[in-house]
Image 1 (cartoon, rainbow, N blue to C red):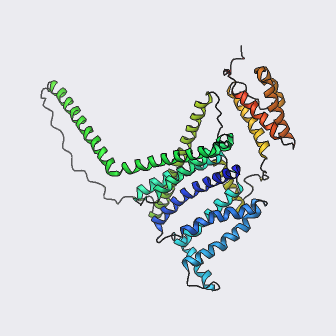
Image 2 (cartoon, one colour; image 1 turned 30 degrees about the horizontal axis):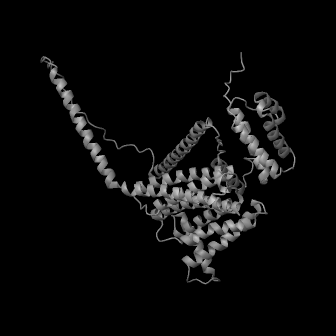
Image 3 (cartoon, rainbow, N blue to C red; image 1 turned 135 degrees about the horizontal axis):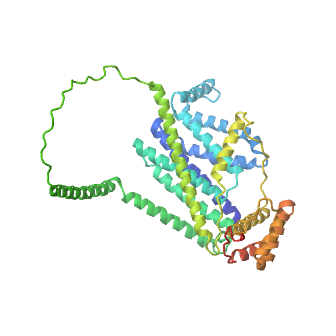
Length: 468
């Protein structure tokens, strides 16, 4: 039951993150180019319907589920369009399909309400399909948070630039951070096997929710207090102080100038007179037409937006790398490197998009990997952590070494932990190269061995320590 509730919380956190930033994006599109209102509740229903539908088809591969899922989505969007946009038309009226098609074709000349409903429902349906076939980990939530944060920052800049309303953007941003903090905390704790499975999980959950609510409340209070009028008042005070300081600097330089005696007057020779200079009468040469300049402006905007997203991604990656280095030397601390979930999701999306258009020669088709059992995944993860822990202290594993070839080096390095090194290595080889699954007692002994290894204090060896 605990594992089921934890999975529900993790899946709900991912869904909340995606719905928050995409809903803010829809609000921007609606204010900028679409009149009227959108069927918000109906569009939100596409997400859970897609998730449940594809979970029921989890026994089939994603390729086999896409056609049936697309057919169900087409039926649902037809029903939604009939109810909201053509309520007076009959269900069997051929004119209904024609009117609906003409409304969608109008998106070529500009964004319409019908096309926005179809686009947003397709995105929500795709989000639900992706969530149903994926597995939610700590790195998945961090990747979703990084991507969504970049989108929200971009939307804030666009809303401020175009002077649009932020009534929906602010609560959506608060909801985004609530889901992010909750999901990251629960996923990190569940992978470590700490308070989520402990006896005081109810108190920890309550404390977590109270802490997140306190953080969001303080953020909302700051956003209310620091309004544009207060910022203008602070900026006016800074401008007045700057003018006062600059006035004293000018007076100081004038005082220094008065101390220098003026130069003696000298008569200059008369200069030659020059005739009036006539400006060019030709009309200015226009290099690009108006349409070409519009295209160049669009390409320039896409380039600037790409640079902003790349900078945000780079800064967030450097922050996580700095935290990893700072926590690497702490006692009884374990730092897991981020595998780049956002980058993997983007590559997978591009591959699926190329497959849809029939372009398969750009990449090799790989077989769909089946999810590993929990015990096998825990053993492999523990061995990877052991390798990273030893490498951080100067005893790394070479690329050509097998686990059994690497074991003597570990035994010679720390003989007092020889039994623990041997146990972890043997269980890893057994689960890696055979279909055997370790039992509950073996997994507990594995965790105790890894805990003893982590508590061992070892001085980090330099790279040149073995060279003489």
